[in-house]
Length: 120
Ligand SMILES: [Cu+2]
Image 1 (cartoon, protein in one colour):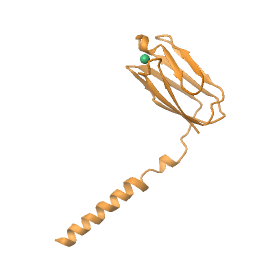
Image 2: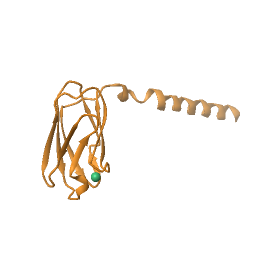
Image 3: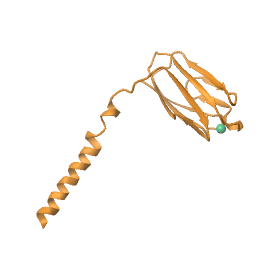
Image 4: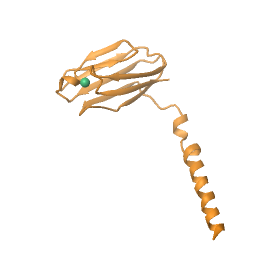
């Protein structure tokens, strides 16, 4: 009986090791970027909420605002000196011509909409 318990303990430990160290190769790989993404602004969230970009490559974002509330009317890129007003029911394009490496938040003016831009 104790052999069985030990065995299951070893298997469990093995699973934990696998889960935490071996099962996430994607995290180390740099994600693919296209340099162009459509972001839907609706129901208090940006979709997608995380955008990847390459340092030194232009990034074009098309904000598709589907929320009439004034909360959604502006997008601000913190740390990048970039912001834009978004017309409801329309697509507004924001271009970051040369984003430096780093991680930046982009939010509405009240910071209820929250997104992350990761430039690497
Ligand atoms: Cu807001």
